[in-house]
Image (cartoon, rainbow, N blue to C red; front, side):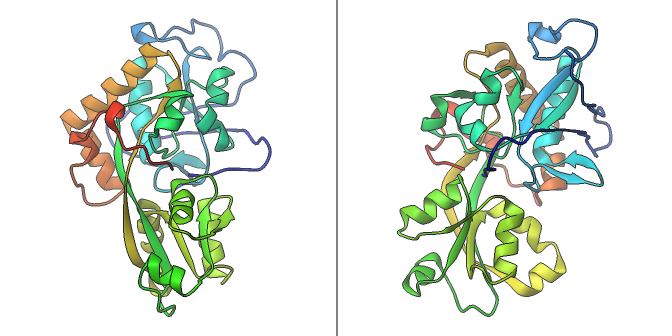
Length: 291
């Protein structure tokens, strides 16, 4: 996924736009979330009373982005389900992506969990505990329609200037194929780099590309030259050893897959539903790739 230079945190409002789901909204606060206990349903200890504090990094549509002043997306809606089960509201903290790889904001007690379209990897498991996989992801090579580029190998042979989002599996994959991608801070910056001609092609998560191509102007200008199956699965993370919260997250995901809520949210935010993480491997056996 992504990174930011320096420390940047913002408290943002989170909401689900799916009928029948509990609305969860957060207001910034300098105290412990108000009066009351920090222990939620199931004995889960939270960093602030009455709220599930989620670290993310914006924007990363369709998983999380600000829409009409509210943070919405697939990740947001799934974590809303966890918050609902715990009897609290979700509050989102926008933070640099590097903290997701190290677990820094989880360890410092600023967040309860992290949700940022993050790939489960063996390296990251050393610093955080991952939930069960909730999404199977692939990378895509997006190019200008007039570029003549047909594949990543073609881009390499033509010495095309390639872009990718910094600190992501897309960037790692491009490097592993012998390319030297230009690093961009965010997914928006990646697209803008392609639009402006700063780069001629980009490698980034396919669901993000799908979202871009829903816009007619983007679809008229760009196309997917190649889908790159890197075997990635996304997971949410909690502080190492936070077994009760991890169990609550996994239960919410399992319940959502069982009762059809996961499918509805998938179709709303991602597109046509294809059974993947719903019947996929456990986090313990997920591919050691990196996003």
